[in-house]
Amino acid sequence: MKLATTLLLICVGGLLTLGLVMLYSAGMTSAGGHYPLMPAAWAGLGLVAAVVAASVDYRHLKKVAWVGLAAAVGL
Image (tube, rainbow, N blue to C red; front, side, top):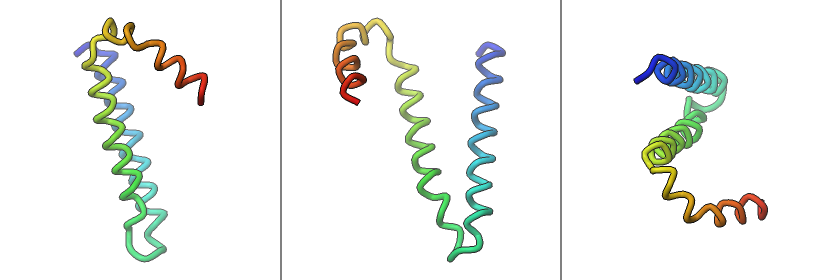
Protein backbone atom coordinates (compact mmCIF):
# COMPACT_ATOMS: atom_id res chain seq x y z
CA MET A 1 0.00 0.00 0.00
CA LYS A 2 1.04 3.51 -0.53
CA LEU A 3 1.93 5.72 2.40
CA ALA A 4 -1.19 7.91 2.12
CA THR A 5 -3.51 4.89 2.07
CA THR A 6 -1.79 3.35 5.05
CA LEU A 7 -1.93 6.60 6.98
CA LEU A 8 -5.63 7.01 6.17
CA LEU A 9 -6.41 3.48 7.35
CA ILE A 10 -4.51 4.05 10.59
CA CYS A 11 -6.37 7.32 11.23
CA VAL A 12 -9.78 5.80 10.51
CA GLY A 13 -9.05 2.77 12.66
CA GLY A 14 -7.81 4.93 15.51
CA LEU A 15 -10.84 7.21 15.41
CA LEU A 16 -13.17 4.21 15.24
CA THR A 17 -11.47 2.60 18.22
CA LEU A 18 -11.45 5.83 20.21
CA GLY A 19 -15.16 6.38 19.52
CA LEU A 20 -16.07 2.87 20.64
CA VAL A 21 -14.00 3.24 23.81
CA MET A 22 -15.74 6.54 24.56
CA LEU A 23 -19.15 4.93 24.06
CA TYR A 24 -18.16 2.06 26.34
CA SER A 25 -16.95 4.38 29.08
CA ALA A 26 -20.06 6.58 28.78
CA GLY A 27 -22.33 3.54 29.04
CA MET A 28 -20.72 2.15 32.18
CA THR A 29 -23.12 4.08 34.43
CA SER A 30 -26.08 2.14 33.05
CA ALA A 31 -26.65 -1.60 33.37
CA GLY A 32 -23.38 -3.02 32.05
CA GLY A 33 -21.47 -1.95 29.00
CA HIS A 34 -23.83 -3.24 26.32
CA TYR A 35 -24.44 0.17 24.73
CA PRO A 36 -21.47 0.12 22.29
CA LEU A 37 -22.50 -3.24 20.79
CA MET A 38 -24.77 -1.76 18.11
CA PRO A 39 -22.30 0.94 17.00
CA ALA A 40 -19.60 -1.75 16.83
CA ALA A 41 -21.87 -3.92 14.69
CA TRP A 42 -22.63 -0.99 12.36
CA ALA A 43 -18.92 -0.17 12.17
CA GLY A 44 -18.17 -3.76 11.19
CA LEU A 45 -20.91 -3.68 8.57
CA GLY A 46 -19.52 -0.40 7.25
CA LEU A 47 -16.03 -1.83 7.01
CA VAL A 48 -17.32 -4.84 5.08
CA ALA A 49 -19.25 -2.53 2.73
CA ALA A 50 -16.13 -0.41 2.24
CA VAL A 51 -14.04 -3.46 1.32
CA VAL A 52 -16.72 -4.63 -1.13
CA ALA A 53 -16.99 -1.16 -2.67
CA ALA A 54 -13.22 -0.90 -3.00
CA SER A 55 -12.97 -4.27 -4.72
CA VAL A 56 -15.65 -3.53 -7.37
CA ASP A 57 -14.34 -2.21 -10.66
CA TYR A 58 -15.73 1.27 -11.14
CA ARG A 59 -16.28 0.70 -14.86
CA HIS A 60 -19.01 -1.81 -14.02
CA LEU A 61 -20.84 0.89 -12.09
CA LYS A 62 -21.29 2.90 -15.29
CA LYS A 63 -24.01 0.46 -16.37
CA VAL A 64 -26.11 1.06 -13.25
CA ALA A 65 -25.28 4.71 -12.62
CA TRP A 66 -28.84 5.77 -13.41
CA VAL A 67 -30.11 3.66 -10.51
CA GLY A 68 -27.78 5.49 -8.13
CA LEU A 69 -28.88 8.82 -9.56
CA ALA A 70 -32.55 7.92 -9.10
CA ALA A 71 -31.89 6.80 -5.52
CA ALA A 72 -30.03 10.02 -4.73
CA VAL A 73 -32.81 12.17 -6.20
CA GLY A 74 -35.40 10.10 -4.34
CA LEU A 75 -33.62 10.52 -1.05
